[in-house]
Image 1 (cartoon, rainbow, N blue to C red):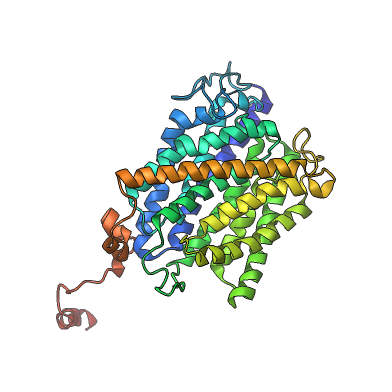
Image 2: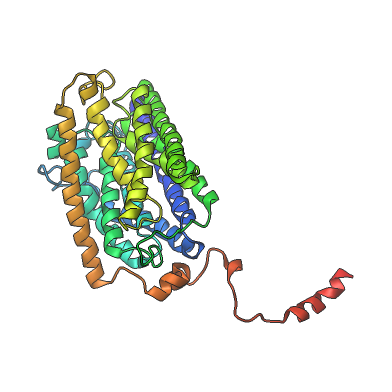
Length: 448
């Protein structure tokens, strides 16, 4: 095998593993930001969602997204992975029905695995926004629909050689393809489910619902931060030293700028530097830089991240005031800043960074052409994903129901949906097996 193909393959697989590790980050962030009584439920959803996505994306989704077809969806390579012959004689330089991926010479299975972990990320985004009130298996069924159709169709438009790609729309690592799509699906789910019991008082005021473990949420954010160094640089699908080094720096710069600005903004608006806002600020900056990371300078990435940090705080407050209950702020992080990052390509892109791609954005003398293409893509993806995900949610609701009973929601989904608890020592029993006096008497000889 060509040494370059071997090195590129190792790079793609290692970065894909980092993106896979982000599942742990999403699980712990979402669990930590919700009540302890729902911890098992959140962890289980994040664990199983990648399993079901792996199956449906392999069987159907990958072909719809990357298979040769028309400008709207792939028609070939569906029902399993076609042409995945990894013998040394054929590895690399794949030529087959997934023509939109022929630009990279790594073996087809490496391309598939890298794209699979992205599909899993899009599905996982939805979990947090509908947390604390959705039926477990209803969420799993929606995740199957997400990995089969919702994510692959718009992905084909952009990364599969579809009509948005031909229009001149650019999204390097997925601000729209992954994050906005997940965000739109999360928004429709949160709206159709309705808010949690007790989240809003009768007079419309917002009731505090703090997460049970911000240590867990912080750990998860660090895991996601690490995973993003696979998410963005790995999208080169080649071990290009200059490109991956610069993308790592632009990715980190946007994230830290957003974390700082979110901290400042939350202090100004809420009176204190809210840790949850700081964590979501970091994630918002990483989401925003995902589309333009390869096309912009470090200085531009700092500006993109700073704006994201302000936007995420304002969005969390606005969604709450609109009584759209998102326990973890997924819509504010992934949807709002997925849109912002996509538009930032049209503003900050510079042709010198990646030849034969975006050209210059509005702020660098390229005019409004690129920005208009980005706006068109944002609008097209929004219309389709809102309509398709709303239809999917309503179908699940009509056939299985999507919301647990009021009693189960109040008592917690861990017991109602799973029959166990993440913190069994916290269980309060109506009667103790022995009286307190008996326990003290029994322990007396040990103290002597």
